[in-house]
Image 1 (cartoon, rainbow, N blue to C red):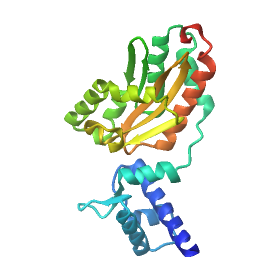
Image 2: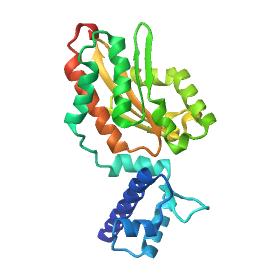
Image 3: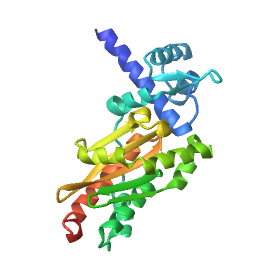
Image 4: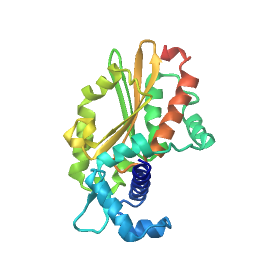
Length: 252
């Protein structure tokens, strides 16, 4: 049993290093790269064996055009659920950006629009807000950040993503109806349920309540996003908005 646990711990360690490297570099990760970059006390052959095991488990994929491996969406799912350590953001830096933008906001629509801009700037991904009551309010910002990601270099792929995202609002209403019982919800690839965005991930949070309603605050990006970075900043913005704006008359 101890030997099994030690081996699983080693698998987890290598998977985490592969995912972190892939997030940063955006290209397949080889055993030699891992050994040299992280000064690992394993031979390249040992690392290749571990990475092969991770591939058999469905966490990594081997690209025939390269000696390296890339994480699958199931690998990212396991990483987010079991391995990731949430980053602690510089709250002074985060709150400074927020305060510059929303200190004087007096209208709900303005707050929701500004929140989508702020979360996009904080994460360098596309940010959005949705509030559904008497009429839907949907604000989306940060397309230029998405354009910088290699996954979206093909303009047709990018067009399909945003068309689906803006038109399939029923998907996001479902999250509102369920009140997002989890503080933060991460949907990776096919978990979103839309073919057009199967190469994307969503990080979502409830915002509110506003009387008996809730708003949705979220981020759209590639599966290869920095989840720890993104989640920590989404939580910081949610916390600030709820602590400083829920008492305002227009939110009640």
